[in-house]
Amino acid sequence: MAENARLQLQLRDVYGKYLGEKVDIILRHHVLSEVKKASPNVTAKVEITGLRGAPQGLYRMEIDPPSYQYVSQFVNMKASGITSVSITFPIDPGKVIAVKFQAYTKLTNDLQKLLEGSDRVLLFEGKKGKDLYDSLDDIRKAGLLNIAVKTNATAFANGRTVLSYIERLTEVRGDRFFCDVPRELRSETKNSVAEGLFHKVSGSLHNPPPGFVDAESFKTSDKYGNLQLTFFTNGETFKADIDIDDAGGIEHVFQVLRNKLSGDPTHPYNIHEILVGHQHLDPGYTFVV
Image (cartoon, rainbow, N blue to C red; front, side):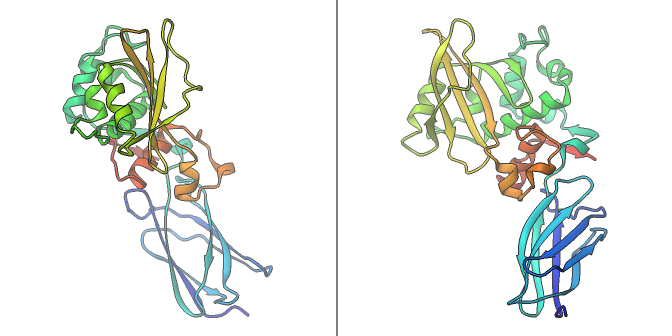
């Protein structure tokens, strides 16, 4: 017989709001062939009763919301009373039907300056500033804003941010952008290794542009959502390939089951959820699901 142990769940998105939709919950006892199911509408705390308590209170819990990614974790119930568990759910990229982006005028000064100076972006030649920003598709714009907020939050000992050094964008993708940078950015990045801001990594997966050679690659020391700067030079000028590395973050930060993901591990919407939920950085856009 099940004991009078109760499970209290707080199921929220990366902004701390309750999911606001009906979810499917399955609790499988770790030893016994007992399964408890529930499908509550998550507008407040959810309570599930009739569970076994310790020492037989270990369950595998699987939660499948319609708009968010499928999460699984173990829960060890107390001997009696209430066991409280709080879970944060990342959005499912495959369920996003629209993205609400901040207006150009709301962007940081450094990002506006960068866009104003970028009139030769691949596939968007001749566009710059607000015209360039408004022309980017949702995936590219999300990737740009992800990297912008991360580079703006990454500051060197001299007080300047990575973003403030970037001179011109040459290509924007959902998971990275390519840009012209001054020699000083590479020097400051190398210098910051001793301070623990960046560390040197292999840049072998990043191909140099024609006429350029590898000039070292560096990552921040974040556990998940690392900023990576890969430099190239032709001996006189420098370019950089800048991206945010998922490094399994969406799986480990949120305990997402990988085989239930509908988005690619490096999808910009996944990076958004890591930045907001794990690093407390807001790229400036939200989802409609």
